[in-house]
Length: 387
Image 1 (cartoon, one colour):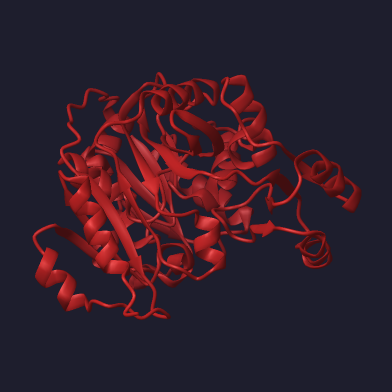
Image 2: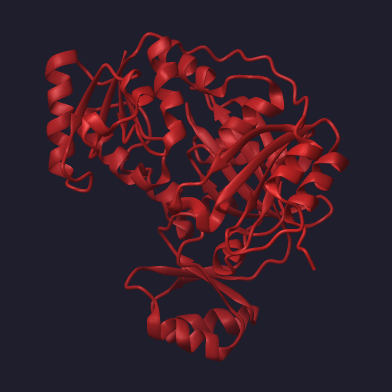
């Protein structure tokens, strides 16, 4: 099997996907803008061949790279980056090289938040009231219906970048005056706790692996307030959340892909859909999959792609938590204090690349325990202020 992987060097931990593809017997064909000699030994060791382009945004360069690989290795069987930023580019390349996977005609439903709403409704899942806003009149029409606060976010956006909460007509006027020249969607503000339904679907759309996470606060608030956060996996997925998540997999036609579907829990057993992402959850969550269940999700994904191996036995033995720290914050307990007290629970500590630090902090602690009380206690101490 020939698998083209875009930007195999970034995020840094994603070489593990390429390594597992190679171990499964695939030719791993990398395309990136980083000089080959600058790739880490981990990345270089996973690649059958690497094609460097000057600029990943020049589509004709990517076409030439795909043509080169086709000439030397035969038909390209799969193409991916597992990175939201390149989803539209991937779909276009799949069209041009006739590669299985999400195509150009489907990409808007997993990229544009306005199109997601229609799919959520088709799945029977509640969504926030909202609409595309092109003029001040459009905005006031929504606000007349929902009132303040409202949330404004790019219709085709990544994460919580350029996303704002507007609490008044003054906020709205300031936003409209300075907003980027791109389509924005505005939605009623939903008060609730974020839950996600996460995992990997097989070629028939059934979850090979699934789990759920809950977040201490929203990513929008974390980014806009330059704050820290924590989130952790659940050992048992709430039945209603899983039912809604599976309906979304069916309606969005998720096949042979990771998924990360976000909801607000507004009350006990009540959820409102936020957005769907057809890629692994952000940050180091794939590592958290492994620590929570004692599995290797990188190998599972590669075996699914290369051999259509979809049978996976796993148990959610632990809650696994990610808690961030920010360099601009002071904390009651030092790094050494945390390790001395809870080192036995720590499984990974990461310095976060700058492009992700606004959401994931500057330092990330990953820890696990069968006890949710212990997880919450560790997160509390990591974030405790000295006041």
